[in-house]
Amino acid sequence: MITFPLLNLELNINKVAFTVLGVPIYWYAILIVASLALAIFLCKKNNGKYNIKFDDIIDLSIILIPVAFICARLYYVLFNLKSYTNFASILNIKDGGLAIYGGIIGGAIVVYIFCKKKNIKILDLLDYIVPYLALGQAIGRWGNFINIEAYGTTTNLPWKMGIETINGIQYVHPTFLYESICTFIIFIILMHLSKRRKFSGEITYLYLILYSFIRFFIEGLRIDSLMLGGFRISQIVSIMLFITFSIVYYKNIRESNN
Image 1 (cartoon, helix red, strand yellow):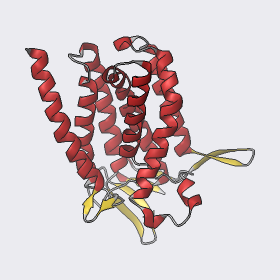
Image 2 (cartoon, rainbow, N blue to C red; image 1 turned 90 degrees about the vertical axis):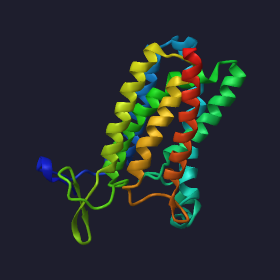
Image 3 (cartoon, rainbow, N blue to C red; image 1 turned 180 degrees about the vertical axis):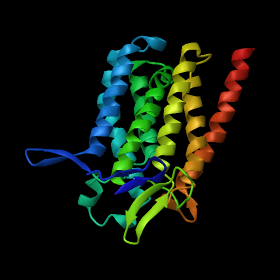
């Protein structure tokens, strides 16, 4: 059971949406597929933007989507090995266990190779697709809500979320909601700025700057962070991305204004 006292709301959501020939279809998977379908639909509407053809987006997606998911899973597993005792448990993602930074790394490698083979400007292609990555994150985080995962530490703030534990209802930060709202705002910002892009890579750099900034603080509230020693891995990665791409963005802005 999940409760939101501020809204006087109590929810009991089954992780399984429905079954097909006895095979359970999970809400987590439905939300991921829905976010991908929406992203592809929006990409089609912007066919030709930055001289990127929609046909190339389709060709890229065939490779990018599975590789990004595999890398997101491997990243999560590698930094959480103690939770996986056999190969079958690694393949079981119905309860979540995907790390967005792993997906971004894997996706970036695929995009680089794809652009080299197709002779496409990589920063133009990234600028074309990254706003929809932010939108996909905003939608996908609701899968964490349904799975009752990726929540934060205990809190008494008015917007607290109640989850049922062996010790009764525990009130926690709804960090899934924080990130969903923030990434949707990032999507809106990027879509607005993409109409008057000043240089190739501007939208990509801004995404990395904005997302790493909000992820650093949200990660600090979570109780399920992947750890490296005594440090939260996502916070380390966030700091590195924020500093690196803030410098790159500032340098490009100065050059574009000269």
